[in-house]
Length: 250
Image (cartoon, rainbow, N blue to C red; front, side, top):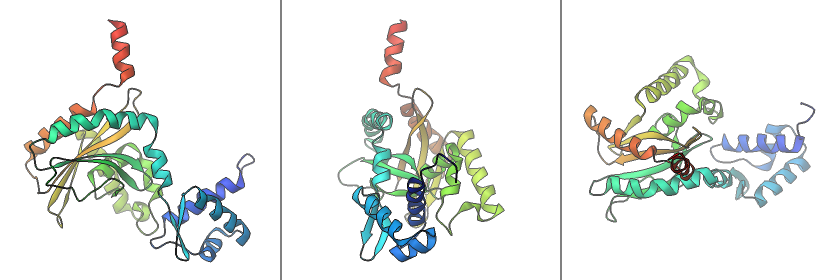
């Protein structure tokens, strides 16, 4: 271990990664075995992480909590962008049978932080707090395009690094998303379509991922192009700082 690395912090991160890779959570003994650290260390790590809701306990098992996602979603730059995007998205879908989603990159794909439905009579099955797949969702593919390192954080058994075919799929997703400026995925089970585009801050950071959910399969290329362009026009809304700079220049 490097000289300036704090062992307890390093172990806490390892513990979180281990839990995030577990489908049903782990017992304390399982964590002790996986990390190869003393039981007392595991107990102290869990006690600390539980107190901050980074880890949750369900029965005798520990699972990865939502606190990290909440912290990420509360980032001031992202929160400001989300506030600016909500009304334009609501206007965009008004009168249409679809929903608008605002997501952010997360450990394993994209985390939905806001959902705007076009009417009270229709609710999108994807709600705020939903984790969207890196490969099987358009927002996840946008996250993959701009954060290739997310490949390394996939849960064990689902990692796209398992074989060359999946690595090629990842490259294809990134290439298509960056070339077209949008991503589109279909869910045959729900008969639905997701179209997503990136939204950047004034300094070029990927601030959010905007997407539209349609409860039908849209295969018409022109339709997809038009909706993606409408999303892109919203994603380019200037921040207060850039507006202020423009005023000063004038």
